[in-house]
Every structure is written in C-alpha cells, then in structure tokens.
Length: 330
Image (cartoon, rainbow, N blue to C red; front, side, top):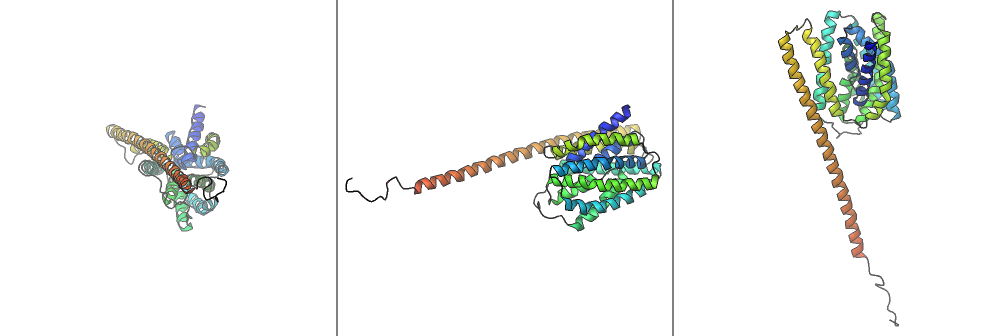
C-alpha cells in the first residue's frame, strides 16, 4: 500500500512538472520504478501505459487553456509514434543486464541536458510567430519518440527544448503542443511493448497509481504553465534526474565504482545542483526586474508623449474671443 501511494504521488508530481515544463514525466517516473528494482523494459511499458491517460487529460487541459498548436501536433506526433514503436521493440529485445545501465545512461544524459539548458540559457524570442517547418518537426519527432521509448522518457526533454530554441512558438504553446502530441507517442510505445513483451511483468496496479496521480495534476499543470518560472523548475528537475540515475549507473557492472569514488561524485553533483538552482533563481529575479523596469520606462514614455501632445494643443489654442469681429458697443 505504501508503495502504491508513493507511486501515485510520483505520478502527481511528475505530471505537475511535465504539464508546466513540457517534459520529465517519463524520466521522473521511470527513475522511481528503476529505483524500486523494476525491469527497464517493464518500467518503460508501465510508464507509457499510464501516459495514455495522463497525456490525454493533459492535452485536453492545454487545449482548454489555448496552449495547443494542432498543426505542430500532427507534424511531430506521427513521426514520434513511429520512433516510439521502434524504440519499444528495440528495448524489449535487450537483456536486463544491458538495458538497466543503458537506460540509466540515457536518463543521466537527458537530466544533464535539462539542467544545463534551463540553468544557462533563456528563450530566444526573435523568431516568435514564424511557422515551424515540417522538415524540422518530422526528424525531431522520430528521434524524440525513439529516445522516449528506450529511455522510459525523452519526448519532452528532446522535443520541448528544440522547439523553444527555434523561437517560433510561444513557450506555453510549445509545452501544450508537446504534451498533447505525446498521447500518440505513448499509445504507439505501449503497443510496441505489448507486442514484444505481452503483459508479462507489467503491474497494472502501478499503472493505475501513476494514472490517478497524473489525472489529478493535469489540469493544475496546464494552469501553472502560465505562472511558474520554467528556468527554475528545469534546474530542479534536471539535477534530481542526474543524481538519482547516477547512483544506478555508478553501481552497475559497467562501472562498479568503489564507495569513496561514488561519494565524492555525489558530493560534486549535489554542489553543482545547488549552484544551478541558485543561479536560475537569480536569473529569474533579474529577468523579472528587467521586465518591470522596461514596463515602467514604457509607461513613463507613453505619459510623456501624452503630456507633450497636451502642451502642443494648449500652445496652439486661441484665447476665448480671439479673432472675433469687433463690436462697436465694446
């Protein structure tokens, strides 16, 4: 029962992050399942089965709040589904001994990407409003879908930053479109796992726990996307994923690091994570202060223009009675 509650809470937290950041539901939930000793292929299958429901709820919520570009959903979702089906088949045919460190390595890489991307870089807005081309979206969807299935997550970490970096869409529409298209990807990945594995080893109670938590969080996350600072959240989630999966990787047969080495690496990772969070928070505060200063300057400039216009009208106005024909009685 405690495990089920923990899984439901993880699903809720993962969906809050995913729905407001556009990524990390899969990598966060898969990290938990791997920590519980689940087979990597079964963990990914469990996550994707739960995501069929959570992504549907998330997509509907984002659509309700006007966060979805349906053209982008179609252009990236179909190639993503193809990549996800291929990735699920590939992972299902790997042995557990090979799959566990492979998945941990993918998750560490994705976590590091999220951490670096949101800690060090802002959002490029110079191309905002320009159409996103199919020749960019199709390969992106194919790669993101494959990584998503083999890593237990990756659709958001690959797709969201790429679309944000293009600067052609509003951040909220990037997140809403990625979350909505993930429904197709989750469905294709689930079919791939079911064809390759059957239902063997998949705990439907765990699927239900993740699903319930995600369904509760989906509408909240769609609302939060308008208010939460993505930069800070990205640093928090990215660091958590890196540290958690580094533990699995360092203890694997690939590395099998001694205790002293592992503890030293953990200390460095925690220090870097703390610095990243502090830096992101400071950058967020600086950006907010700059936006406020720009808004105040713009308002002051607007008032000055209005005041100058009023002065001109007063100067050019004639006194009352000026220009009136003289009256002999005056």
